[in-house]
Length: 231
Picture 1: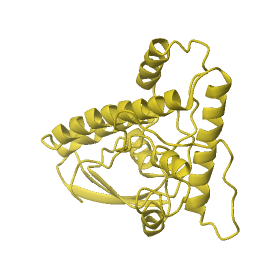
Picture 2: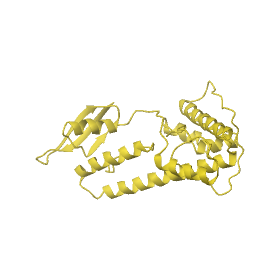
Picture 3: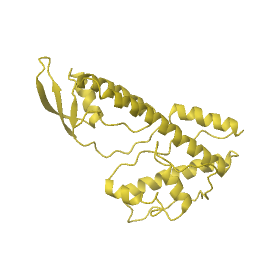
């Protein structure tokens, strides 16, 4: 992908240039190696499908829940979820009414609502939902975005089956899913708060801090955020 970047020279001249990189993050890294600290990089990131790791803080929270629920033999929840990339209008259509339009089965729709890290979930106390471990099949007319979501839902079904095989219950698994997204959302909100503070800094300082904070987000398995400078 080709990206248009803007930076200030040592003589405080406003300059710009072009660079080929895998994505915007990679463009910033390459430019930094060249001694250039851009305050803006324009260009759309390619659609990416990544396997996101479960965040360390989340594992601590989940581990605490497992102990409190006395399910010491239960397996660690695997990384089956990811941010859904693709055509925005298609994703909006698929996720209408909390995925209930796309997935007629309420259990499948519930899993879909909890398949993307750091989402705002509908997790009131004493959630009651029937979830089947039967995999969802792929259809010929499925969009790539829907196929990705089906894979994530099926991954969560497999995850739940492993939890059940280890002696857990569906109710406990639901509680763990709710705790997982709450923890992820808390981590992301904390990082986003940090980015809001960056807006008060000099643009050249922001680029370095932005790269550092996004590195933290990636290490936690959460989506990165745009450079906090108005484009």
